[in-house]
Amino acid sequence: MYLEILLATALTVAGVVLAPIYDSLERKIKARLHSRVGPPILQTWYDVLKLLAKELVIPEGGYFTAAVVLTELFLSIALLVSVSFLLFFQSLTMYVLVAVFISALSAATLVKSVTQNNLFSIIGGFREYSVVLSAEPFLILLVLLIGARGVTDLKSLIGLAPVVLTTYVMTARIPFDIAEAEPEIASGIMIELSGPLLAANELSLLTRRYVMAALPAYLFLPWLIANPLLRVGLGLALTLLTWVIFAVVAVLLGRTRAAVMLKGTTVAALTLTLLFIIVESVPYG
Image 1 (cartoon, rainbow, N blue to C red):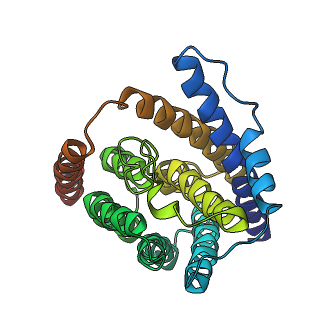
Image 2: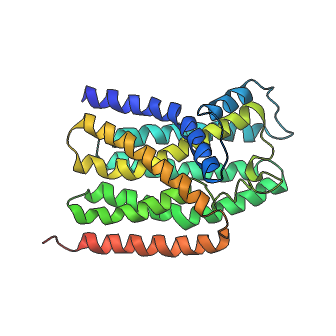
């Protein structure tokens, strides 16, 4: 009991530290694929610390936005904590908590976009809403189904496909980064954020990306591996592997139209989720 709590706490701390490092690794992988050198492995941490050292500037009417940004960061860490404990405690309550924090985090992102009193931010919020609708309902349903039924046999692993698909969408990578509008001049939902607030927003996004990279492994490993230390080792390794795969996929989808991908993702997530439900409802053997 105490060992599991200690390991879950260590995984939470590791997630906070590793998320910016993995982001730097992703930037280096993308640079290599584009025949560039790429940044140092700690570059994202340098960027975050530099932003934290900047003057705190809150735009006119933006105090509520600042509160929402901090709330979003808190929810990201809370989601990381709940997912870390999910690796050791398989009660339905833990799965419900994960689902609640996923939904609350998306809601906070939407609220942040419409409270900045900026047209580009509001447009980014509507874009974020379309992305959320294409993946989040299916991811939450899958989390709750696995929590209620468990992974009883190998055929349950068919649920891994829709989980990986929806978690990729929820990481806001290409072409699902339309809310941030990174390829555009205006930076979407982040346009009014600077200094420490932008650093908090960046840490929130990176923490969410870490959780989404860890979630596929953390949902299935507890039912397949009995040794808690082995779970931790495999969980960390598979999280890194998933992050690297997501980084490569983002490069491969660089010229994909977001509208086409959103429709395709919704259809694919719905089909794979229904297939998982059907397969799980058929008695084994």
